Length: 264
Image 1 (spheres, rainbow, N blue to C red):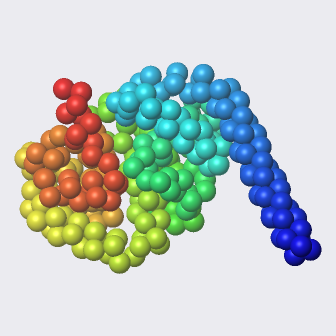
Image 2: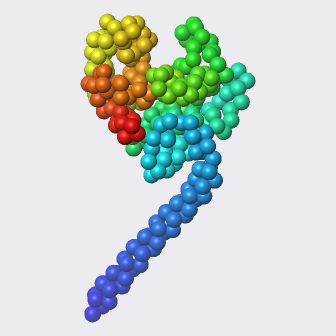
Image 3: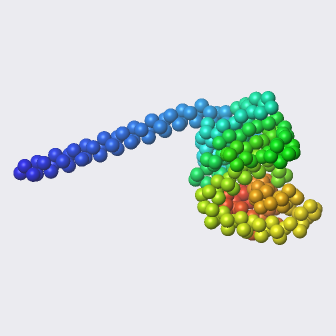
């Protein structure tokens, strides 16, 4: 009988502890959800304003736009953005730059691009001792990106010209990050890109070339230019270079041609 009493007491204690743990987790989750809802509500009323001219965001469904805003917010409060040469960083700059990164990694579950720690924005082109020239953008190996704000804006003012310095430099950072995650997978991708680059290099500079001459500087530049084209002229990209387009789709886990066609 004493054993039965002990068994019943033990079971009741176990049940009580389970209820307490469940209740604590529920309360914690509800508190966190409430906090995030309040934070999101405070900022989300503003975020869509600068995104009105952000073509990628406008293509998304309502549900996808909500996910996009949540990711944008987390990126915005995590990444450091500094102004150089007297450039004052505004809220709109923070939103649009964070939106560019959100766009690039929207197909990923791990979308934060942790290797990127800081972005330096310049008013216009800037001199780089690294390449001994005036440049519009530069991706540094120390988790930093430098961008001309003027040319970043131009990249989104014309969303179909296959020129987007923001996406281009972010693509370089993504390339390094993905090599660190799965080097064998990315080495295979790099080999395939190099083969396509070699095949298409004969047309470099020709009017019939889909890619600008700079794309053939090396494999990494070819990759970054492919990313620009993938987002800005995906239907032509898929039509003219189907295998290469599919390769970029495989890496970015998005199908931009499909999105564009749904709008037609």
